[in-house]
Image (cartoon, rainbow, N blue to C red):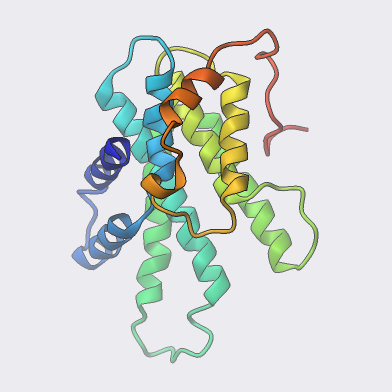
Length: 222
């Protein structure tokens, strides 16, 4: 899928200056193997709405969404696997670089979205991720949504608002439903996860409706 490749290239470019080399290699490997669904949804959502668009700006937003997802996904993996549990304190662990990589990815993703209309949703994504993972670690019921659900919604918001439009409610709902229908992780590739008719579907759900002043609940809602 062309949109997925746009997101992958943009994400790699966004971290091209990361040093030292060992850390950069960890990040490069993550992005090489990653599903680009979050970034692809950003590009596809921008294409679905009518309005002035800057391809480079859209690609940058796609990179921001993708990097936030990769950083939080890696964080979740480290929490689940606890790679330090049986390690010697004198051993240089790849997991140490993984922790640093996760922080760098999220920070760089935030920087790319900081001055966009999706900035608030990016903050809400991280907040809800923290609540969900904390509840899961304590084996208690949670009303927080999964990482994939919030990131898919973040992707369509970042893409839709790149055209100068608000994000249609049905577009948000579609992204949320798409994430929930493809759980649990890991995500499949964009070619496998997104339907062949994704462009038509996104155009249909992007048609504004009278109730589009409403918005699905987010982590920052009271």
